[in-house]
Image 1 (cartoon, helix red, strand yellow):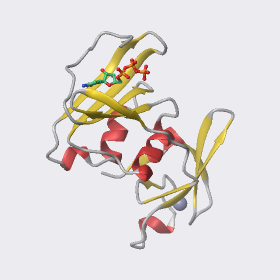
Image 2 (cartoon, helix red, strand yellow):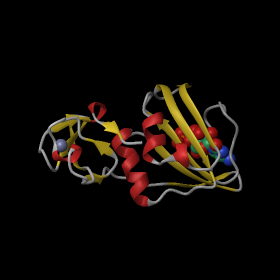
Image 3 (tube, helix red, strand yellow):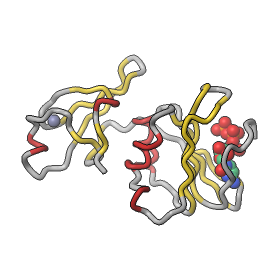
Image 4 (cartoon, helix red, strand yellow):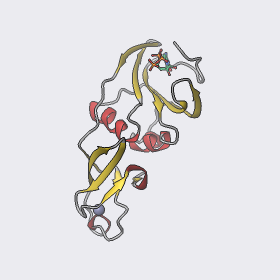
Length: 152
Ligand code: CTP
Ligand code: ZN
């Protein structure tokens, strides 16, 4: 282990490491961890040799689906997702940027139909010069990732 443990090790579950600073709380909402009963440890602005500063989330007794792991890439392309079994890192999950996301984001365009009709939000995802852009399927407007709120 290259870095000292800033928070204690977990027995079974998932560690999401190297999260871009500031994105951990959005990932918490993405995964609905605020409403779950799983034990969760959150580290914000922890020192990191490779990134300077990073966020980190440890979730006891939960394994992410492939879709959930890929959605995390939208918030933090450099995040690493580790599956922990019996205190050992069993797997580093391979991820890729999804091409679209349903339900998670709220369209910032107040005139968008998603605010007046009960339709689930739907955004197309693209990476442009290292910036993640979201385009609403309904109003067709594009936004930077951090302009778009996560529904909770
Ligand atoms: N970890 C944990 N509980 C364990 C084992 C590991 O919380 N029982 C955490 C570590 O603290 C680290 C992450 O899981 O944040 C990945 O562990 P490891 O691969 O050992 O760390 P690094 O070598 O630093 O990972 P990387 O290759 O991603 O830099
Ligand atoms: Zn819209």
